[in-house]
Amino acid sequence: MQRVISRGLLVVAGALVLWPVASLAAVVKGQVNGIQRLNNPVWNEAKEPGANRYTWREPSPTVKAEFRVLFPHAPKEICIAALGPGAVAPGTTPIALRIGGGRTSPVTLVVTPGTVIEFQNRDPFPHRPFLVNTPTFQASDMKSSSNRQWKVPGPGKYELRDQLAPSIRSWIVAEPNVVALAYPGRDGMFTFNNLPPGDYTLKAFFNGEPVGKPMPLKVASEVPLEIKEPLVLAEEAPAGKK
Image (cartoon, rainbow, N blue to C red; front, side, top):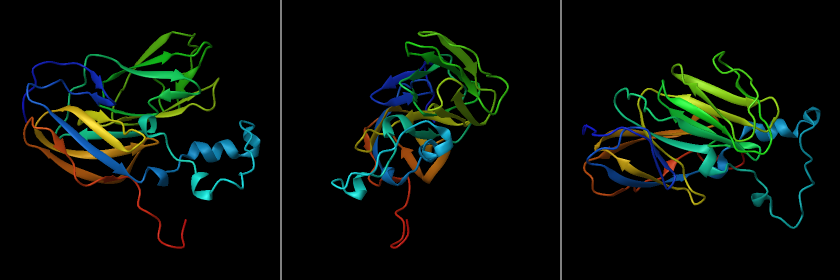
């Protein structure tokens, strides 16, 4: 694989490059399929009567059932990782995870172990975020406009919650061979703006879990590449089944 010449973090048009930018790198475009068939467990939790979190109105008879189905906000919730053949060293620049409006941006993030995550409170009121499955990031007050950093200790899935905002539930997945990330737009299109030549596996993540079938990808040169087949996130249910 082409050696890199500089190290850093690059965010351009929805693509997050975790690997250092290379002297030869290609723009790779693709599309996901099946966004509407993904289901977020947070939605069902919020409907539980004992949760006392939201009031769900009766469905409007003038809106077709197909348009009343909840589905993910792809630019935040669906993370596509380009995985290389070997382990990748973490970058030296912290990656921002912003808290605001009852959610985080992004909701699912995939990084290499050792990466530093900077949680940023962008709300005008405090938050108290914590990771439920590790003692290395416990609940602590974060005032408005404050930041708090955490270093990913090792491979695995880390779930973020907030003692003051129950709607916040996000995931950080640590994979050793993450080269770059992309987030699809509302139309399902995604772009890796600087992907060095090499062999990759494209893998989609939602709610901290891999979804769909991984796709092999070969980048032969710096020539722009458009992936012909869509990356399927979820298969359509057989007729008669939901």
